[in-house]
Length: 207
Length: 207
Image 1: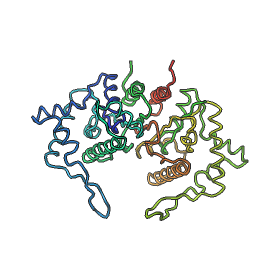
Image 2: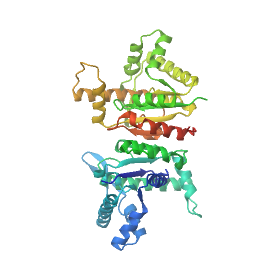
Image 3: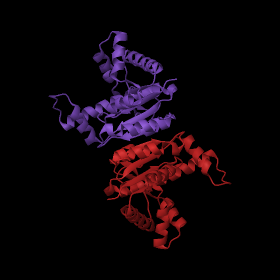
Image 4: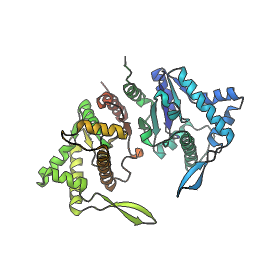
């Protein structure tokens, strides 16, 4: 059976970069945007549209009064559910193909039968804002406040997507094998140690 | 300035062992029980009594109705506060002496001026119960249920001690640099990777 690493991350924490570099260090395949592109070929639907459906298509939670408590139940459109199902099947198929690192998309839970190494990447607000600014497209001129609002919105969407699929909460450390705080860290410096931790965790002999 | 690593841990997670092995791997001093023993020499009070005061001396939180919500406010005796203050001073003095690993006792926050590496060690319930059983004194015959209750009590005490001193919550990953899930892991296997992560994080050249 192939091995899998799932990388969950707060927006702006550098999780995607860490996942990519980890895949390179280990010689694993890396899937992120590639997943949406494969979905696009399969469905004939535009990749940006799909991404948008998955990120915004009814994922915003509604507070509903339930069993004497307030829980957030996301209202999800039928089309979004279908896209989610396709994405889930696709993630499993990619993991079947060979050792891989998959970023986000509830892959930590979707890949359970592969016993994936579950990594969560996070950072403090100032550090995440700085990372977003460093990689922002030229001409983007959000204030800190707007950027923060956008970061929170994206993380909320990720959490909601995750928590529809998985029985444990996005970002709750008990669901992950290792949680890495990237505040003030240059991602590439820590890659060898995270790769080493993974190898030891997985019982992979090192050269 | 000397370097410090603080290890916070759930009871039964193997955090103490990880801390000790990390200190050995790095050639750092290691302080855990040593702190209470030093307090004992300083005060002339029995070490077990001190430990008990710090663990149980009014640390049990009382639910108090406050500002339209329920918050837990620990009721702490004056003597306990004095012992806490002495322990805080002692932890700082130990860190001044040289590079060290300190387990628990809110050392993550107490040592802030040393910019300590903050490690949190946790594991799932089954794994923590198994670890407790493996190291239990001969003749101890707690049921799983009793053991679990005791584990929870100790962790609650640790959290309350921490949260009196530190402005962030014990066990909340945002307060730590690295959170390690030791479920199903033999502690000694991961030590080299955690030590390496720490070195990279701290910018220490490796040989």
